[in-house]
Image (cartoon, rainbow, N blue to C red):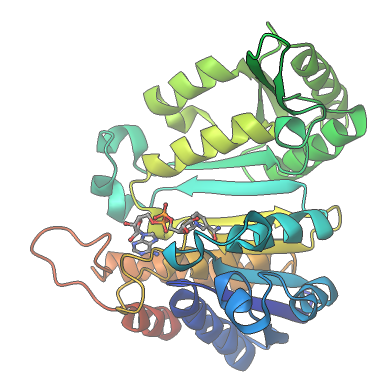
Length: 359
Ligand code: NAD
């Protein structure tokens, strides 16, 4: 049975409000035509929240995020807030939301709709139909490990250092997350590490292998990060689900997103242990096109599809959204970022309208 509940909508900065507006239209359509039963609560975040309340994540916004079943975020940041002190920068809101809500599992699909195969820099036959999911550990590893810092030796030489650290329970929970994702897909997980050089990776590989015995229907393989980077651009369709650490996942997921050639098309999810999640497009606030009504809202709309599937277990609604996107693309409708030469692009709200019509 699909679940109903509350969605915190955090539009943020730049094109964030423009693309989330279209996502809200999609949610309203699901409510009115398919009884999805979602209540939206809108709250400020990022630079917009700093301007209004003096903080990028005001307590009221955090409270709404905590008490909701899912969060849909637009994007934060922009030149206006680049010179303010670090703890008040818009991007801090994202880090705080992830840690406050314990969102340790970051899911980034890299999907290439066949209609957009020409948008990639790789040959169409290498990427057409690409559908991979990168599961990145998000709250541990070298970005958080202690000790860290820059120390000055007696001879005034400075040394910078960070620590990559994972305990068994952190590895177990991200492994479970990846195996569960794979069960709903092609049932293959590739765990990416650097076990030939790093002890932390040795433990990672051992624990992932132990967890895999609980998922006999899923096939597990291992790959070193350097080879994974190479394979991702050589033959990306060999992968189904990739599970990896925070650092390796950061790099791999950005590389994977570029295989599709269109940053305006890519959704993401960050989940806690109970599949409560923050859903957001992979792209940023795109200050260069903000306010022009030309941003592509499909990454945010596809984030709604991920939300419906994962948090609300509403597979039908998720499938409907993804199918609507495919049909709109098949009809030749494109925002300017994905429009080829000679075709007339449509606006952000026209794209939202077209998706709602297909729904
Ligand atoms: P960006 O993703 O905002 O933009 C990169 C390029 O892609 C730009 O040319 C932009 O116009 C284009 N683009 C992005 N999304 C698009 C869309 N939906 N439709 C059409 N074109 C789109 O990355 P950036 O320029 O490096 O960063 C701008 C700001 O966003 C910075 O302040 C950065 O810190 C912030 N940022 C926020 C997030 C987030 O909120 N999760 C992520 C990345 C960057």
